[in-house]
Length: 201
Image (cartoon, rainbow, N blue to C red; front, side):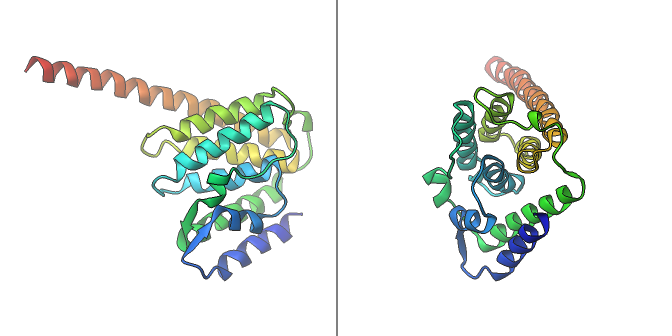
């Protein structure tokens, strides 16, 4: 399973010729749409410093989380996400990230504790993805990295039915939540102090 998709992603990256590449094109290269694969596809670009991408993909991942929470099994990219375009350079980087993620997972991931890699109705997985999507949407510098990594791990867990990888993703999601909460608290405290100083001057 792993070798063909890694090869396909890398060949597609090398063959890209258009200056702008849509997420729909990347989805076709990625293959069959499923919860895990779509999550990987949308989380991948959030690891890159591309302005505005996190907001659109964050809403897309929130929509995916909502579908998973409701128990929907058929999924597709939201229209706005499908129409999102990346430059050829960034599209190649995204395909490279996905290929590397699959190649690494292929060495270690396997079907185990599959009940922990579940997308059933009202699952903890859906809740975690929804929370990480909300964090990605927040305008925090470099704030996408941990939640995107968490969703990449959860996505790989879903694809490989590997509960261990999915749990690692959930742990990373918890870490991302506390780091983000700390940053927001610091910004609020120091921002309030600055406003008070400015008002009293």
